[in-house]
Length: 473
Image (tube, rainbow, N blue to C red; front, side, top):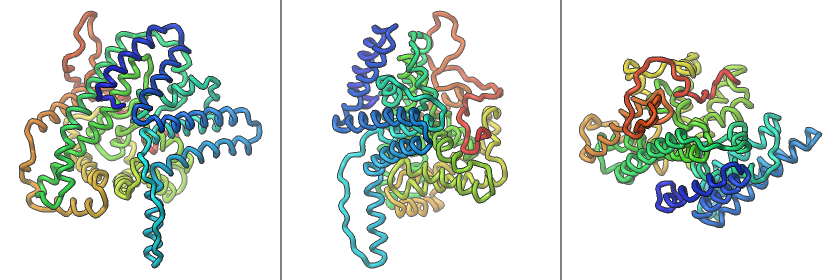
């Protein structure tokens, strides 16, 4: 079920009404959430619902076994059962064809012709998200950060809540489970602001991303037919398309969860206002970046140890981040480019220059912001291209004097919509989302476009997520 669908427009108020009619009965409310999540997920393809239920049951059971085991060997065995099966499912559905094709190509280089069978199945929606939910849960139990949850229903709310099931954010049991286990009281102010956040998410997804997509698809389908300025336009529009898609869905999810009394992790913090690539990765897909930091980067040694270890750890994280997004070399190269852009900051000790507590971005930072945005746009070309050859040809096509022209494909109404996005988010850059209105007097109308907030004071919330090299390692 899509957020931007008529079915969801019926589904959401129905679940909302049933849920709050049961207020005061936390267990019944949680059961409603689980049932609604099954309907939401099964709407795509009911067959994949069994995969979600199996993954949920697996991590629930192995979590209990890890906690109950007295011997370290047994705890480790149950951990690896969960990790192995979860990653096995993810590998089969998402990465099997990539690896088997790569292996076949490798054999071809030494004269062995192989034609292994490929899977012709649809990728289960949200499998990367709920897999990472479950993995963080069992790892946290293994590391004794949390206790195993005894109620299967309560655990199921954490791992399969429909608001975050399809596109995140990737939640942590330490953050969401305590909310699942306590009674919720309807908060009209929070729910109203949640609706505003959903509205802003729909604007980014439906108005920005969906209008950029046809132009981007046409340009990337035939890059050789277009002049350099049009290719540049396609790359910039894709930057806004993917931001509108990802962050728009996150805003809808977070706002939707607030209707039910839940607070989800922030996932995007105006990333295109970043002053360097390190800050960009503290603002972009925050829940994924922090997941890799806590469960991969820190266990590898983080920013401690010799320089070669630090460089290795950073590159591993960026390559994994790229591969997580898709089974294609283009995603891996996209991750590698971001890693290479990050390394000079690490070597110069500048990777924490704009860490939490840094002053909010100002107009004087515009050159650094534009440079960082330009670097991310170049990297996005590899993310969007179907293969590396197309991506490299696309870049070669941009290396022309016509780069500085005005593309014929530019539509001024689309440029105006993107300008609205930029202006509103710049005005709101110290607040959690584009339509938040603070300090309203009683009875005020809270829906118009918010006023500009241009304070130069520190904004820890706008860059809440720590970087891969956080001081918390």
